[in-house]
Length: 310
Image 1 (tube, rainbow, N blue to C red):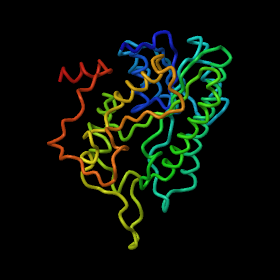
Image 2 (image 1 turned 135 degrees about the vertical axis):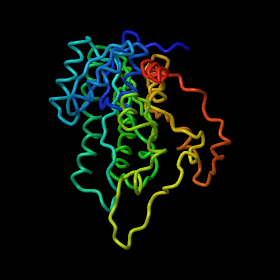
Image 3 (image 1 turned 120 degrees about the vertical axis):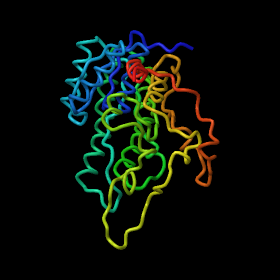
């Protein structure tokens, strides 16, 4: 099966520098022209540069996904530049945060706003664009394992990712009459494989380098505090031994946006090495006894060449 997105135009929100950049690169490598959005203009431009040095076509469309006028403006830029929009990937989100005992109202509100309005506004206006022009397109919202099961230390993130999951199902029902598909995609803690990001923070990800006192960052030092997260080795807790990389995510999102997935809507595609499927009492094999997945099919050719030259 040869996946091809030739002739399609994609918008990716929150396009830098980890999952969003990996998705943008994948869509471009499979043939789409890609518009990279991020509230940080530099991050959007760096995502474009990565696509272009791998032979793809992309533009930067910086803007705040919670601002209706900015959303309409950057989507107009995409249409003016490429003529249409066939694919939307809603990836913009605020990471990090704290647990329910420590999170601030300000961070909680902003995190929920980015997810809620980012998904809503972009889906609304891209959906209208597609419906008005008879484009039977694909919209993908990036969820998280935190949206399906409880995790300590990220109360705002867990709340808004859970909302994303039902937004997908409801939007899929609204847009089904137009032949527009809406799906969710659930990764979990991918290991970065963007050469630029690795150069800045080193190899490995959250599984290899758990944040102090858990994913949500440090908490108070009151004497009544109890630890809420396992701080030992985490990779063995994943059945396949790895949760993958943004390239793994990109391959699957590209397929979900292709015509091969023409009847898939209102669903969630999980790429997490089996993390969500396992029973709480499941004890995976020791790392040395795990075969692991087949080798990764790379998309960042320049990154591979850089590594080989070292």
